[in-house]
Structures are given as C-alpha cells and as structure tokens.
Image (cartoon, rainbow, N blue to C red):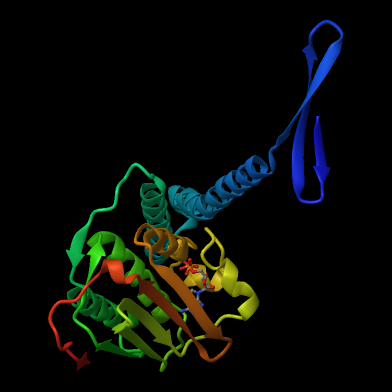
Length: 274
Ligand code: ADP
C-alpha cells in the first residue's frame, strides 16, 4: 500500500513477525517517485521529438514512391525537406549521446590546461558564420588565464551559450563574448540584445527539453538539450551558471569558475577587443 501525505509518499508493508504479530514497514519513496516521473517524462519527450521528423520523412517518401503524384520540382523540394528533418534527428541524437556521456559518473573529467582565449577566438569565428552578418558580434578578452578541465566539454558549454545568443537575437542585434577574472575567479559571459526571457521561466531553463517557445527553438534548430548539457559540464568543473534576462531587452549568461580551476598565465593580462 502507498500513503501520500502532502509532498511525501510512503510505501507501507505488513510482514509476519513471530506467530501472531505483524510488523509494519514504512519506507519513504518520495525520491524514487520523482526519479520515476522524470524518467517517464524523458522517454515521452525523446519519443515525441523523434516521431515528428520521422512522420514528415515517412509522408514524403510515400509521395515520392507514387510517381504519378510528384513532379521534378516537387521531388527536389521533398528531398530537401527530408534532409532537413534528418539533420534535426541527427542533432538530437548527438545531444542525447553527449548528455549520457556527461551523466556517466564513471567518466572522469579530463584535467588539461584549456586555453580559453584560443577557444573563444574559434567560437567567435563560428558565431560570425552562424550569424551570417545579421548581428554585430564582439569578443572581449580581459585576461589570458587558462582553465583546468576538459577542452571538449568547455567548447560545448561555451558554444551552446554563444549559438543560443545568435539564435535568440533578432537581426541587427548585438552579441558580446567576454572573458575576464573577478577576484581570482574565471568569468565567461555572453551578452545579447535578443528576445529575452521572462523571470518566471529562468529557473527551469536548464531542464532537459524545457523551452520557453517550442516553435521558435525548433525553427532555429534547437534540441531543447543545450542548457542541460551546459549545466552538466559546469557541475563537473565546479563552475556556476547565472542567468539575467529581461523580456524584449536581452540576456546575459555567466559562467563562473572557482579560483582553484583558474591558471593565471602571466602577470599583466592581455587586453583585446575585436
Ligand atoms: P534550445 O535548443 O531550445 O535552444 P536550450 O536548452 O539551449 O534549448 O535553451 C532552453 C530555452 O532557453 C530555449 O528554448 C529558449 O527559450 C531559452 N533561451 C536560451 N538562450 C536564450 C537567449 N540567449 N535568449 C533568449 N532565450 C534563450
């Protein structure tokens, strides 16, 4: 039997105890229930995300197989749409694999000296090509300190914040990528003049598949897993994520590394702004 009282779920079990007596065993299963609900939600979300592109591809294939129903021009169009849906599924599976790798606690963190400046220069170029001239994107390097951790994971975390800024900022907006030190702590932040987020949604943004606007996220190629990946990577680096945003004004996503993970390179920081 199960007994629910407010937020607590108890499992009750009566077992024989001696000849005549019985023992009542009560277990608090609140946490197990929560995990079970999360697991079920996760499977439902993944299935839903995969079903939509598969339905589109299936529909087009049927039309293509029926030669009477399709012209040469329509055929090209159908193939393009199918390729788009296949890319969407590919991206989702890639993100799922990244998450599962990060969640596998056996997978220990690679401790290398990560050249943040070099990494950010690369991301700055990628952001520019993703934006294709629609935004003004600047890179402000106020420190040449390095971070102790995994270069691949940090590239994926920083890259997610940068690509989100591009995807959620309308044409003509400004985006900046910044790296600095603050009381010995390493601070990377991305600032945009994008659509912004209402404060009530902010605490849920790092949940898997949580999106403020589903259709906008999909349209711009989002999987809904980006910030969940960022959170995992940061946990593994004992770093924190702070989000400040105002609807219609813009957002700032800040990653802070503890001083123990920061490796100052040389006295007198390099200052660069491009
Ligand atoms: P998605 O693939 O949907 O972008 P993320 O996990 O990266 O998934 O982000 C979760 C949600 O947070 C997004 O769907 C979007 O609603 C919101 N979001 C993230 N970054 C920004 C940003 N820079 N500006 C506005 N909204 C953002």
